[in-house]
Amino acid sequence: MLELKFVRNNPDIVGRALINRNMGTELIDSLLEYDVAWRECLTEGDSLKHKRNVVTREIAQLKKENKDALSKINEMQGINDRIKEIDDQIRDYKSKINEIMLSIPNIPSETTPVGKDENDNPVVRVVGEPREFTFTPKPHWEIGEALDILDFERGAKIAGQGFTVYKGLGAKLERALINFMLDVHTRQGYLEVFPPVLINEKAMTGTGQLPKFKDDMYLCCADGYYLAPTAEVPVTNLFMDEYMENLPVFLTAYTACFRREAGKHGQDTRGIIRQHQFNKVELVKFVKPETSYEELEKLTLDAEEILKLLKLPYRVVTLCTGDLGFSAAKTYDIEVWVPTQEKYREISSCSNFENFQARRANIRFRTPEGPQFIHTLNGSGLAVGRTVVAILENYQREDGSVGIPEVLRPYMGGAEEISKV
Image (cartoon, rainbow, N blue to C red; front, side, top):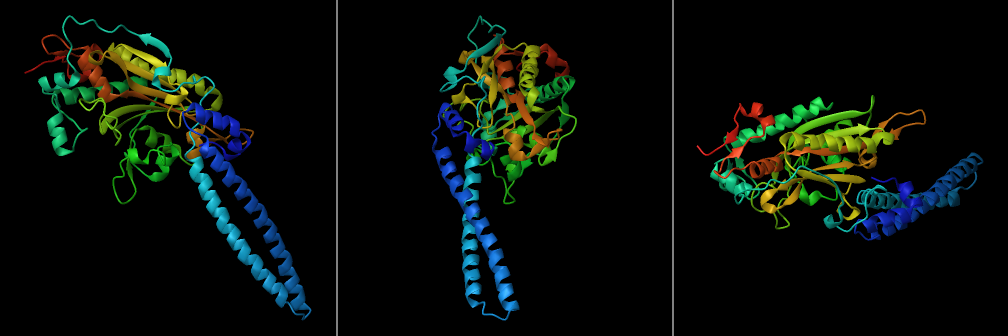
């Protein structure tokens, strides 16, 4: 969330940021109108309350002197009626201002390139060479069905499209990846936490999922709980309404994640690249403002380490303004090579939100100059299902079996491959 004072004093900066995000400036225009009206009401309300105090004293003096105070009493009633009207207007304007403020995205960093969409995302680095196959590679869903480790039909039967049952070594591979990722990240200095996946509205608002993305979330019961769309939400909100000590703080967490948006664009309707339920290991950092961009580089490298250890080819791109997430100031996407699609696909987004989330969630730290909002960062380390996709497709063999990356074998009971029984 941006600071109202900043928006008020810098409408051109905020307006330009919205335009660079492929948005119009209507939000800013409406906000400034409501802000002017709100402050005018505050001024009038203060003036009326001062006048009411004066008239109150005059009434008291008239009564003390046994003089007629009726006209002053009537004047007092008029003042009170107007104050009530003004207070109602103040609440209404403040509500509208808050609603708009929650709908304004973060301002992109100066180092975020200006662009329209993903086609304008510059490549930062490419790591590893895509494998040259001596046979025609199969897509992961065909591999999974042939090896009887992915069951799309039964997943759809018990839940619907966008849900999958993992079986046998497929289930073990998913679990192995979760444990492997957590082990790597804890060695990197992250503290593992295991948060709830039921999240209240305040926490969802704190990280920016609400109100903008409400239709993408699963509201799961009448009590108002949402299913976690990403571990970023519960982990970041662990420190909601708190002063943090001993910064920086680095956390990692596994959660199941749930999103309605899966497949809504008509792409990836087959397989497990887009699912309504998926597993993810998340990295979250809480840092002081002066170190946040250095920590973004380190966080991205920490997520990349998983792909390096798995020996999967990937690249890193910087998201341009038109492709940047709502809460982010700068984002690196890590994209893994998917052979059958002959392109790189996102497997992690590593973002610096600066103080945007911390302002919404009220997460601060103390300084000699007074309280400041911290900077929050997060990134997937990694999306587990998409890592399964990358392994199945990049490690597939002509005989239909799939090799298991060496670093995963201890987590797979020593198995070196997945083959048809």
